[in-house]
Length: 108
Length: 115
Image (cartoon, one colour):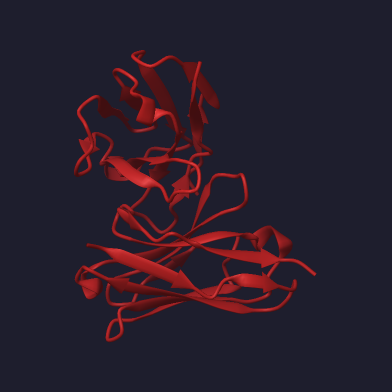
C-alpha cells in the first residue's frame, strides 16, 4: 500500500499570499495518478486536480498541481477567502487507493 | 446534474451488520466505477472500496477486507455497501462517490457503531 504524507499539517496564511502544500508518497505513484481535493466543514470534498497537474472543471487557474514519482505539490498562487479549507491528496488507479492525512489552510 | 444519495446509516451495535445504499442519477451510471469513502468524526478521508463499471472488479482497503462487500445494480442505478462485523472504529460518515479519480460525491450517511 502506498502511504501519502502531507505537509505541513496546518498552514497559516493571509488572503493574497501564496500557499504551497506537499504530498510525498512512500513509493512511486504510477502514471502520476495523483489527485487533490478541497474540503470545507460540513461539505463533501471537491476535486481540484487529477493526473498530478490537470485542473478539474471549473477550478480557477490560481490553483495548480505539479510533481511526479513520489513528490507532488499543490500551489494556490493568491489565496482567496474561499480557499481556506482542508486539502487532501489521493493516489488512485491501482488496487488500493489512499488519501493523505490532509493539510489545513487557515487564516492567519 | 449528478446526484448521489446515500441511505441506511444509523446507530448499530459492535459486531452487527448494516447495509448502505446509494442511488445515482444525472449521468450514465454503467459507464463509471463507484466508490465508498469514509470520514471518521473530525478526521481525514479514508478510501474504503471501489467497484468497476460492470461490477466485475472490486477492491477493498485492508481495514475492511473480509468484512465489507460492495455491489451494484446497473438496472437500478444503485450501489450498496454491506458492512458486517462492525467495530467502533468503523464509525464515520460514509460517502458514495464516482469516477476515477473520484469526481462526484454524495452528501454522506453517518454510521455510528456503539453499544
